[in-house]
Structure formats: C-alpha cells, structure tokens
Amino acid sequence: MSGPAKKVVDVAFKAGKNIDWEGMAKLLVSDEARREFSGLRRAFDEVNSQLQTKFSQEPEPIDWEYYRKGIGPRLVDMYKEAYESIEIPKFVDTVTPQYKPKFEALYVELKEAEEKSWKESERLEKEIADVQKLKKNMSTMTADEYFADYPELKKKFDDEIRNDQWGY
Image (cartoon, rainbow, N blue to C red; front, side):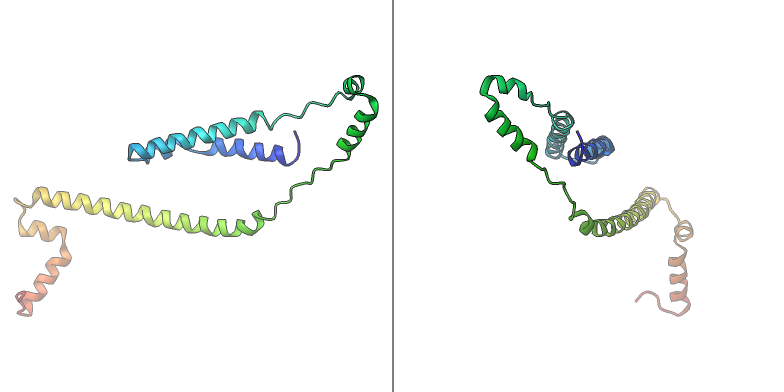
C-alpha cells in the first residue's frame, strides 16, 4: 500500500496505541456510561482492525492474459487501457491547516484549565480535611486551639473587642 491510504492506516494505528482506555474507564461512574464506553471501544477496535487488514494490503495485480483467453483480446485490451488510464487524484489536505491553530489554542486553554482544576481540587481537598478535623475536635477544642488554626479570626475578634464592637 502507498500514498494517502497508508498514511490513514498508520495514523489510526498510532492513535489506537496512544489511547489510555483503562485510564478513561476509571473515570466513569455509572453503569450506563461504562456500557457506552465499552461499545465505543469495540467500535474503535473494529474500525482499526479493518484499516489494518483491508486497507493495508496492495491490491492483487490483474491477470490480463487469463481474461484474454476467456473473453477475447480486443475487449480485454479495451478494459486494460481504460484501467491504466485511471488517475487517482492525490489527497490534498486543506482542512488541517485551517484547524490546527484553533486546535493548538484550545489545547493550550485545556492545559490551563486542567492546571487550574488541579489547584482547585487540592485546595478543596485541604479544606475538606480541615473541616473534618474541625468536626472531629469541635466538642473538645478550646478557643485558644481554634484561634491557633484561624489566626485571622482571632485578630478580627481582638480588634472588635478593642474598639468596643462586641459583635452587635
């Protein structure tokens, strides 16, 4: 095989190798999503398999002599001439150059959003841990222990007391 068809097969094969199916499957929470994902993976594997087998082989050459004996040389020569005159146009990709910059910009935006999401996730996990600690210790915690964890709140209360603003 040669030309654009081989390139398509190569790209599909490489894409199949780079997909983290197990990693994506771990992110699914519902049974319905798992079934849909399983169907998507099966369909992808089927298409990839067809690309690897059906389109990765060169077509068998035509045995013109065999047909000349059975049909007659004049008709076979006419078909052979027509067959050899067929020019398959080369695929010229005009779409990728248009969308590549858009894709790259979206990819950068995605990475920024991912980084922001990781930071927010870390902040929330810390906040959850703090709330759980506070919940666990609330009944036995003294004001001094609480203010040690939240010094900004102690400063606010001290300022209010100092200025005779007793929270009213």
